[in-house]
Length: 299
Ligand code: HEM
Ligand SMILES: CC(C)=CCC/C(C)=C/CC/C(C)=C/COP(=O)(O)OP(=O)(O)O
Image (cartoon, rainbow, N blue to C red):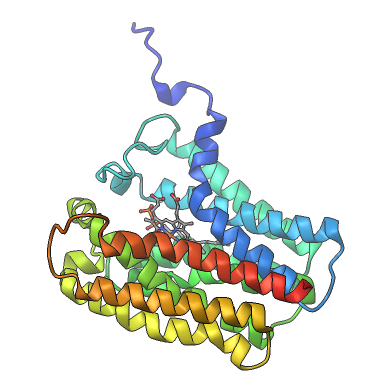
């Protein structure tokens, strides 16, 4: 009888469990949730506010774990993802599933206790949307996967706001729309330079199905209403000049970069490709806009 122990039998490593939550991506998700909460015109008790933001983090992390549980087969086929805990064989699917379900359910229950039913319901819906609608249903079926599924990532500011106020309002709805319209340029810029990975895994991302030229056009197309949504809170008098100026300037830069992406027809130009620049900038953009929103509220 063999005495060899498979890595799957080893106790789950905390670092691998943490990696299941997609911490780097989720840091921005949680930041937008925190800013949505802080931008609300009410002051929540600090302990409850901290708990609400923690719930967004736990819920997003749980959803990330369920996403990795469901698509371990895809992750194993892509260079970018094959080192993850499941394809790497360092965690068992059962552990990932239990961890994902536990975090997701715990986050919703705790949100209900610390904030209110509506915030808990939107959190539950966003977890369902990311896992059920995006991951299970759309991702392997249509290049519109991230347009529709991307809505999941747009909910956190709404959740933060509702946790603080108990109700919806125009400003968080505009913030939702901003992230909703930001997601396609954010993701398609990335997918342009990792498209061979998606092609290898058979995931119908836009550049795989319709080619890079069409994808570049779509990026530029989404950037325009995204910029309009970014400045709308200021134009409608819902925020002050700090946010307005930040949104106007950075949105102009975003549109400019997306036009550079559109203009790039060469396959291998020297230096950093515009789509890489746009992807990196897209992250800075959301951090800066949501940061400015909070500064505006408190300065
Ligand atoms: C369906 C929608 C989205 C898709 C498909 C998507 C996809 C991706 C992918 C594939 C990466 C590469 C990083 C990795 O390997 O983990 C990435 C990076 C990133 N995404 Fe997104 N994303 C989406 C929405 C969002 C949203 C809503 C946010 C935050 C509000 C976000 C924030 C980030 C950040 C911060 C990074 C950089 C992570 C790093 O530094 O490694 N993404 N995204
Ligand atoms: C509160 C709550 C539930 C928030 C959910 C946040 C959310 C939907 C974020 C989407 C960002 C994300 C991890 C995309 C990865 O896409 P992918 O899964 O296709 O990327 P991969 O190829 O790296 O796995």
